[in-house]
Length: 332
Image (cartoon, rainbow, N blue to C red; front, side):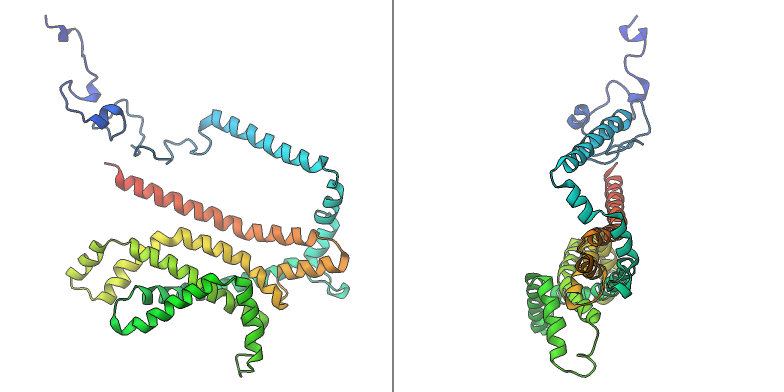
């Protein structure tokens, strides 16, 4: 009897013994040509940090959860201990974390000379929303101008490049001061009589449009030229190809960095307070000057965290989803 008749010398699910395997498959770094002990997992490229199976990518299962929880408690306990054992801990606690002052600054009392930080945060939200919409439109126009190769647009491209260099190089607070103090001094009807919030939003739009236009350009350059060639070969005009083929792909690629810029924009609305606008940070400053306590700044910080952390987590979600989509497209 042949020695191979005693039993199967090769697992049936792995294919016949004479099947050809590449070196990468034998090394365990390539896509398996057959499912050996299929566990329902999807093949991931080597070096990938993507989530495998249903376990947490960050915690790594039950043991990882225990270890991460323990290490987190140790680190937090050490930080709390350092704070509580510091010689000036009580003074800092009274100055920044006084519950009575935190509540008083949150609700405000104009009769006592200070404003509500909780109500003032709504102005930050309004400035953020208006600025975001204007930035998206202006930055796209600047990016398209800089990407254009038409000879007639050469002077405009030079101006667009100078605009980006100028507002990316000048600190935002200086732009706010220049707009907020310079424009009213021009005494232009309908322009110089606006509120400080309008001037602040204008400065935010001018500065952030320079940054976001470069994000748009990166997204436009990330679309492969074959996509453009395919659209033109179908008879689509360049404008139609840009609108329906190039821009959708570019915007999808730049959503995470755009959201990161808008997280910074939400925080930078606090700089508009240098013009005297009563937003959250300015209301906190007024309170601290009235009662000589800084707990109002803690309240303002908490309110900004409530606004920015969900957007940051949403950005992480989009990055994770985009990575999974790309890995799924790379899998055989």
